[in-house]
Image (cartoon, rainbow over all chains, first blue to last red; front, side):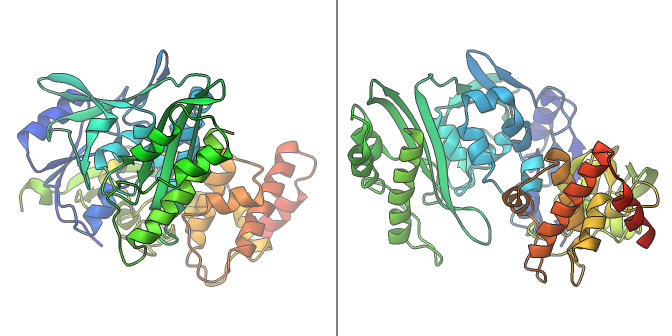
Length: 282
Length: 178
């Protein structure tokens, strides 16, 4: 199985990569390659040029400061093994353990998953639940794009064609935040039929803030605002969680396919939301 | 097509030996290893990044070589199943597959062995669940996985004995069988 022909360029800096994107509108960024290369082999993607950013120094750094900054080229494996990440953002290793397989996790990157915006990806939902931002760099400068504005549609983001993501920035959650990612995987592909990422801040027994996000069932990672509204200010107990979970599909445009229709995915969303909330508030 | 058709000369170290050859950018690493270097121990199973028959190590990272272009490995150090064992004996994982009958047709075996070795590098003493999770990216259509799990457990035991130095008899005798 051979992809269509393309030119290969190994970028030695972010500026070099941006210059290639500007010079060739058919160019595509390659990082871990575990979304792009399978798509190229099926000729679903046929970039005229592949710009490999995986060897750029400094794109893999992980810094734990007031915020948590993850280089766009950090692999799932790097992130899941990082002690600071495990301490502050346990939802990341939890979700990463459910991504693909050991080889995908060894090469695939957080930045790449977000840029690719697969509707059934895992880390996209976690990125939204954590209220992250990406740093996007182009020849005219750099900007940050918040998670709520980043995803536009299936495989579509607000990133400009000549912008490169260099960092994923995540606020450091408060000590009283609980978080969980649960998914129902397609048994063959491993992708999420539905997945729920939940980040819940609880103080003195009541919910201060909740960000609950679905992936797999929708065209892009989508916050479950009916669930969030039901949770905000509520006293955390089994009834509150059950009540909020029942609203998981309210107002959500759910995709169906021959494997899982809308009704089935709606039920999965309710069940997975309850499980995620139970775990996040345990 | 445009400049995309051009081949380029790439070099990589495979199992300790340096090779240089021409490759089109679209040549997958697995095809480069098999067709250009003649290292046919690495198999192509599904071609869609699912089955794991093509697993090798690239700069110490476990990799599906059907999901990497050869040009990405320019300058890298690659280990295939042919180069896994150190010297004349078997690698503990190869010994485990031998002792526990971890294969039937053998098609998935090179990838299973390379993935198992990578798994044990990260986690030398895995639980059964950790082994099954670690080998999720490798598909076997014969064994039902039971003996493969036992093979990895055997390898972990052999490696532990070798590390602790109390007895290396098991590794030595298995090496002679090869």
